[in-house]
Image (cartoon, rainbow over all chains, first blue to last red):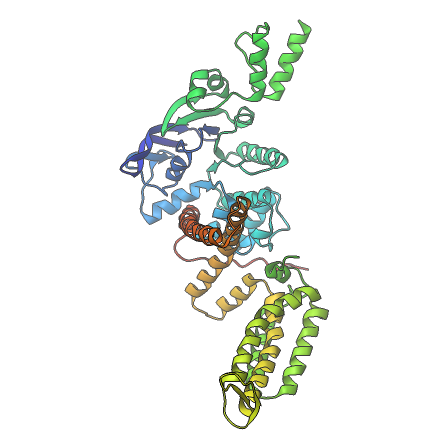
Length: 276
Length: 231
């Protein structure tokens, strides 16, 4: 379980990036953090494993307060893994396997165990066979997978992904969503920041909306996407499927306040409407 | 065709050959070539190593020529200087400009230097073109080269590709807006490029630090030993 209590953070005296953010994510959940660029998503994420120390407020992981001495930081960084938006920022080693091994080695694990984890993590993201490849010879989607493998190899309880779909091609996005859902099924808590709303209802059980360093909404995707005022404030839209049904309602179809968010829901709704 | 030495180093017939062997062979050959004052030996080394690179490592002739051409420019310039401005002894050719002359001594220097360096190039190429940097660094690490040097080399090696990519993109963006149309705009664009790339590098280095810290970086890069394949 991860809890953030009233976090405030400023980069300098004129600009407060986070203005009192509180949120709680239960174990095994998969949640999305929505917000436009510059809303403070990345800043918030860097607080979750102690890269930034908040000016005020606390971060609690499994009920334990995050401390900023070397030993506790190592412990918390094992528990909370961050996948950075740009894999180039994260992957630094000359070969794929060395990069994936970096985290486990820092945890001081025996070489045998590290080798097992590297094999496991690469297999998990479907990158077996690329062990000796240089990262700059990989495609964007492959780099993303390696970046995720690097975090997976640390066996985190909570995985935080900053705009994971940015820069991926459509097939890459589909594969990534599938992978994340599988990881979630295996018990890893997943937090994703994004501003691409179409995919959110597919994976997120809960959604947080961040605007100018403040949370202005929290709830299931159904609840959030039914509140136009929140979306407007956050410069977001409803998923394209939902938009279709809202327009259909204007044409005289009664939706009974139930707008589909995903393709599957839309299909059922259509069939129902057609039968009537 | 773009000449990507790193790609070649990863994709040739000798990539998987023992890097220690390659490293030591290169060092020994370099020392011998530099120590021996023998033109025939230089020529033989040049030919033998070129054959190794072209026929055994199967590196394309074009790539090999490109590899040779860059240092060759320096070599030729250096030797011209040696020929004209060094040594004493009997004058064998007068250029007629400012009394610059070629002497027996300077001729000897120039030819021997040229041949020696020429022989060293394929020796070095043998290592550089067939061995990925990661492997060379690993060897050096086991040979107790100071850790700090290896770590800097390793981080530089990886960030240099991102750096070059960044420059390439920015240059194209500037070029698309006619940033290199005249001499004057070229100067201005290049200046803007340099300052932006500097700021961006600082920014990137901070993010890299965060990413490393997130994975428990303790100020020292650990060494991974891959499992030996059983086959």
